[in-house]
Length: 98
Image (cartoon, rainbow, N blue to C red; front, side):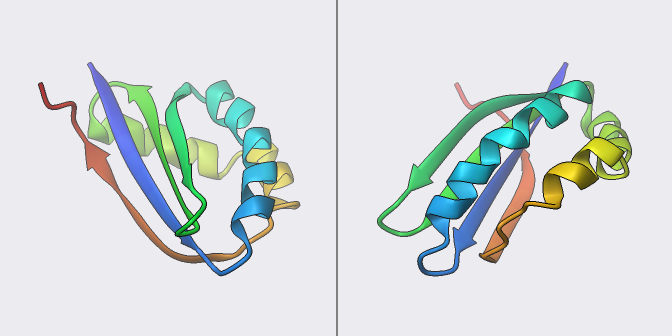
């Protein structure tokens, strides 16, 4: 079983480019904690970034792994250079639809 979390960030005007330059530094850290990037999509016209991350197991296992990841020193180091600029975000679990 795999659980997928869908994340949508609406960026402050003019901030998407900085976020997109920073984002690749986050992916290997997520992977180190068992997460897989499913996709990342940038809507540059609306300055929206949507991405999905997956982890083996159910939602409870995902959240447990996310707690470990959120407390990780590697994550803290990556976020030292986080460009900020997220005006609004929506995060939730999603499932494939045939």
